[in-house]
Amino acid sequence: MPKVAYSEEERQRIREALVVEGLELVKKQGIQHTTVEQIYQRVGISRTFFYSFFPTKEDLIVEMLYLQQPQILAHAKKKMDDPNLSWREGVRQFLYDCCYGERNGIVVLTIPEQQRLVHRLSKESYQVFREKQAKLFGELLECFGIRANRKCIELFINLSLTAMVIRRAIPEVLPMFVPEAADATVEFQINAIVDCLAELKGRPAD
Amino acid sequence: MPKVAYSEEERQRIREALVVEGLELVKKQGIQHTTVEQIYQRVGISRTFFYSFFPTKEDLIVEMLYLQQPQILAHAKKKMDDPNLSWREGVRQFLYDCCYGERNGIVVLTIPEQQRLVHRLSKESYQVFREKQAKLFGELLECFGIRANRKCIELFINLSLTAMVIRRAIPEVLPMFVPEAADATVEFQINAIVDCLAELKGRPAD
Image 1 (cartoon, rainbow over the protein chains, first blue to last red):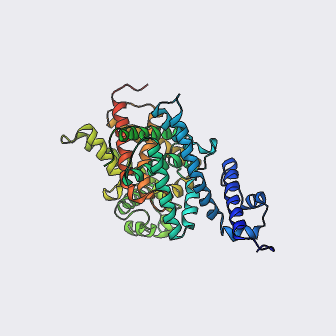
Image 2: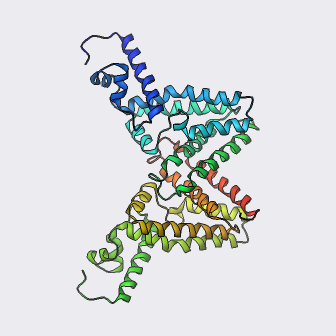
């Protein structure tokens, strides 16, 4: 516990700083290579004080993901507003940027990271996670000009996550997959998603 | 070690029986619920004698997968020869049967099972595994009337494995995926593969 007493407002400010600085570090270095120590030192607080905000690294990571959501949406909007890109090419580039997130400052969790994170969440936090996830992907579809129902959003989540996790899961997590075809597999997945979205765009949500 | 001396021929016969009986048991019960003990008892040999053939369960499983390969190919041929099925519906049903293998007597490894298996293989055995995998998927494409090059085969392997592992990986291994959309995700993957194969069928391999 810190020696000095912090007001609720100060605590809130420090908490936000930890999430902001954490996300910046993780974008540059990846989750695996970012330690809790690096983050609290950057904010200038002690280890003990850090843990009064976030009991584990995963509790912080999930907040970083929530902070990233409007940034991801802004990235999609930028692609959609780019006059040099067709609708199709804009959506394709956005999905590609997410799949190769580490090159584009977008944090995408690997399968083991997803497991650690979700298994840490309480039932209530898991519910919040699901709602925020559905909200983000629903807004992305809206940004692409698609008014989708819950079922469509859920399928879009799974298809996007498939494309995003697979490449980085080969060969360690998915050792039976052919490593030489990893990029082609992602490319195929992205094109299949774009084809599906193009079709959805053409018809009203049921 | 067994008390009696077995001829090389007898050893070969027992080895084959272990693979055959093992595959039958695993088809019925799944890999997880099948023990090495159940298999060697069915063949009527001792634990020690069993391990003189297969140092681990995984060494036996990989042989079971090789034994299953012509069976899978025969299943595909049956779909292709069925006069009541269009080409598209035949391919679709075959992929569907593989994705829901546990209902159709087809052994499909989960992600953790794939990891355990491949990590057990020696460098030489891994090479053999890759060759047999490419041979099976190449023959499947031929069975679908597609003459494909290595690159196409490797992509087909990854796309098929994607469809096959995903459903059973939700929610444990892939906890961020939406469980309610698991079946729709597999359906989408299968249709995307069939679309791709239909296009490949129409043009010569390069």
